[in-house]
Length: 311
Image (cartoon, rainbow, N blue to C red; front, side, top):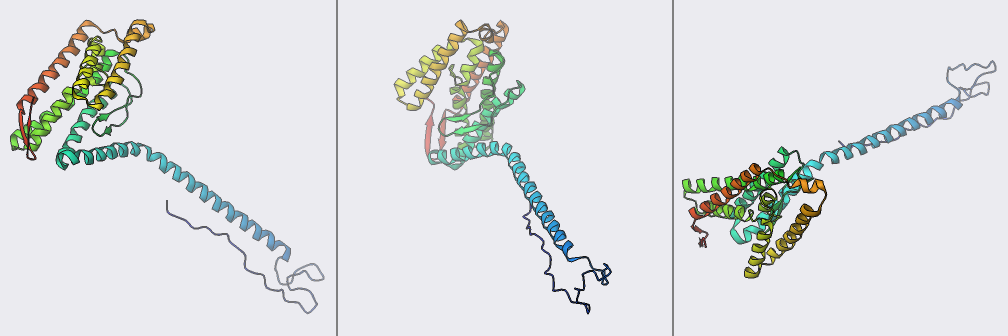
């Protein structure tokens, strides 16, 4: 809204009244009670001036109130844009930090692949009728999408969990295809890292996507995934893994207890038809095979003067 200026109207000063030959002011009634000059008595002009002042003041107050509510309305319209700004802001921070290690173009491509992975979750959540937050990037930990509520059952949770690696694998495959067509070492390295990140996300332990798939396929696999994560922590001494060990261990204990001693509704959450378990297993194993083959196709990578070998 354009800025507006407001002012209160004032009446012009009243000049001294001329005196008639009979000794009366020119605007005052004569001896017969009438005003020979046709002017209103002096006492009525201050009343009109007061009404003008009050009216102008009320108009200014009304304009200020309208301007206030216009500002509030503009703020409400910016709320959806705040989510977009949060995604863009955290993505930019991640690109800057990753560029310190890998260079700018690789950092941009890596964040794009993370975004593609997270959008797989967002799309499936919307298909399940569940509201989701915008993707938020966490440097050196990946990205997250929050759910407003849990899915209706473990099978829906598995679909949401696997949707991320499915779309993420497709994104890495596109990078690999372009790298093969153009001979780009950078894109080949980016494809390799994309395959690796999506493979790691299939670890059968929450908060990884594989842990959500296990909720429908085989919940006992949570303990195997926890054991693998503890083993990696002891071998690599990577402090980041401690976060997943603590979170995954607590969530595994909580979920397993609810399955056994929770309410009938909580126990029913994990009831999945046998054919649905088989289908989830086929998708899960198929993703692992596809990702491993993708990494093997990029066995030796040359990028930025370094050689990357698949162990």
